[in-house]
Image (cartoon, rainbow, N blue to C red; front, side, top):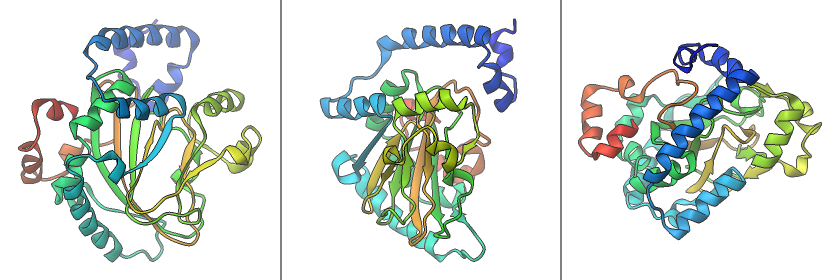
Length: 292
């Protein structure tokens, strides 16, 4: 039997499928539980209000709130920077495109955007959910073009980076049902439907999803600008519902454990200039730096 250290070297898709084999899955699960148990005594304390948020992630897999309700200390700075990013995103050409994405370098020109996602209160919540030290991947800023195309992440899927992970999605404009809201299926229904579909990775069509989950259980997260969606995208089927009437502008933050199953394609710090990286890291404490 391969040792876990050798499993880590396998390409992500092969590794994911390999870990599904019963003997390997059992070995991997035991190793994972040992890490979780060892770290349990070091989980940071969180407030009763944040415990409610945590419970929603644990039970439903998703929580919808607002920037105002979260009251993260740096939100005012974030909001001012987000307005500038939104203007920059609106100015980019869209002809022939399904999505417009800002580069990490463009985003890093507004360090307040990056720093908001590594606020210690957020990291504390996410670490309690993931039950391991957190890895932070920075922010993604995108504009989903309202063309109704069911492509890429507009299709049902689960992320494969880790056993548990969190994405925080912030709407930069008002998002109604025709504006491409984040849409999901609850954690319990995702578990049962994944078993029925024998799902491992990839995309699931609406037709196949309808065969196992009623449309009434497809949950779109609509809301005004400043709506915040917390989601464990590895444990809920989800998609960016195809916008048909209005473009959707959003910022997405991604977090996994410090030892994810699958490594992401690029590290945020390696895709921006040294000067930008220095501007960010000069404002981080040691724990926040470790998250990167």
